[in-house]
Picture 1 (cartoon, one colour):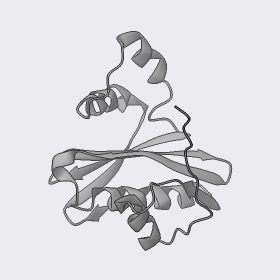
Picture 2: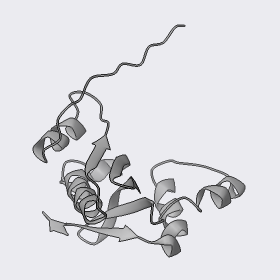
Picture 3: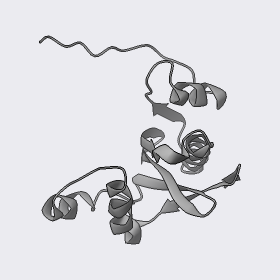
Picture 4: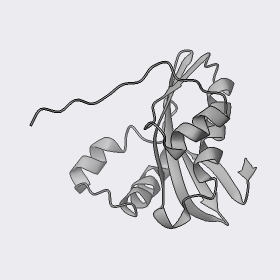
Length: 138
């Protein structure tokens, strides 16, 4: 899929280590032992990993979890220097198309209110099923 110089591809299990390397560029850190345990979950048939490229360079990523006829879209991130170029919208479209291809009848996600993510979700046909808040007692 290509949109405004952004292309998206789904990474398979053989790219799980490449995915960790990409995560590290965003500041994510974990020990080698933790990564060894986590990498079994990434880039699989049920926990699908999508990478966006801007002019051929990896610039953003997002995941989807697909089970039966439900898909959950999550874990979206764009490199700060490349925000505002349509990377997440391209990833959103790619994950929706993939979920439908997998037979999903319900696609869920959650976003921060009044964010670019919320705007993107509305633009591709999502609607809000409610608003939740995080409550804190100090």
